[in-house]
Image (cartoon, rainbow, N blue to C red; front, side, top):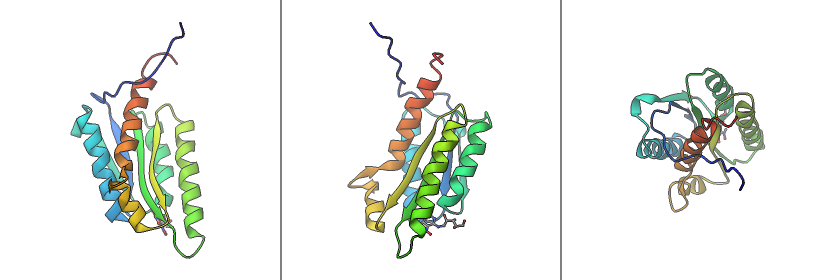
Length: 156
Ligand code: INI
């Protein structure tokens, strides 16, 4: 029989940092609410959750890296929304935040999860922030909860 390791959906006692972009706040505030609701419903205490606000998605990953390495948190959740415009700006920001958040997770001992929307329109973003396509902030929080449990399994 193989040994199977998987995380439990139990956030009791876990300290979580959210790094939230103010750019497109209409969307990121809803993603943040979804993430908070998910964490609390899975047992996290409000006092164990810290929210760090940054100007835009480009600024998310450097802070994720610092927080993930700080030993003060069991997981870091990146929350942002990048919406395509008429110029290549979108591509630069979307690429950097995805790469940077992944790198923050690679370089630290705690999970760093990606709750950053990259969409063509504001409507698509809102659909994914609590409307017909769910709430990607809540999904990111659920991933963080599972991974915090897996990382504390003692197997590695
Ligand atoms: N930041 C976002 O989070 N989303 C966007 O859609 C966006 N657009 O389109 O410009 C955006 N720009 C700001 C950027 O993240 C930085 O804050 C800025 O370039 C300063 O470094």
